[in-house]
Amino acid sequence: MTYYFLTVKCKVDSGVLFATIDNPPMNLIDPALVRDLVEMLDLLEQDESIGVVVFSSADSEFFIPHVDITHVPEYTSEAATIGGPASGGLGGLLRRLSDARPVTIAQVAGYTRGAGSEFALACDMAFASRERAVFGQFEAGVGSLPGAGAIQHLSRLLGRNRAMEVILSGDDYDAGLAEHYGWINRALPHDELAPFVEKLAKRLAGFPRSALVRNKRRINDVTLPPVADVRHDAALFQQSVQEPTVRIRLQELVAGGMQTRSELERNFGEALLGLGS
Image (cartoon, rainbow, N blue to C red):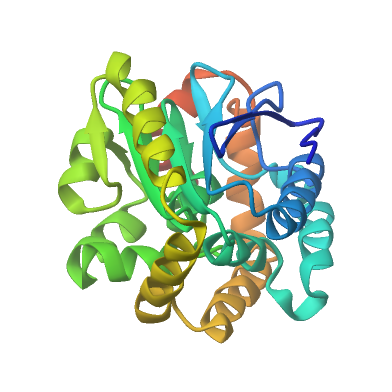
């Protein structure tokens, strides 16, 4: 099967689909990327030759920094093609990523916040560059809440107290602390990250597909939230971004360099402290 997309560069090797997100200028989740992810998930359900998918970034600085806040209705509409308006938009798409037949691995070496963090959380495993990866859920800092799975995943992975810290603080967390908290599987030296993930992915892809599917399905049965909870978070997010306070704070961030290769994007946690002053 041929995997060709505008925003994701694909290569198949030994039963592994290496999917490199390449959506300039900085890998924002926008309608084009969502459209490609929807199509990719459709194809993967039909292609039993693929046992594992590894997601990485073509951008050396940004994995997926967050959504494109100027196109929320459009990417939500694209995500809804999975299951209609009741699918939960982006949250529904990322839930489908968790439910996908192949094993999915996020290989993170860059800034990964908001829905980018939620993308990594939706994957079955996540490994990160100790030197380059930064994680964050900044939504509370603008007056909103994560709407694509972070509340569900982080509450289960980190426990109540640490989930409260991460989500309410909106702060940045380096890969070492993310590993310590349980946000990701492991933080590795940058030069070791890609070889480690490739070796693991090919090891898994060498096992019987049926074993991967059965084990993944049972773990998901135990650990994933009900779909209704994902949809509820998505609805709350959509409501919150319409509030005047949220709009004003987002406008301040955009004026300060959000969605550009700026110091604000590199130090997002710190930038939240100056909002509304």
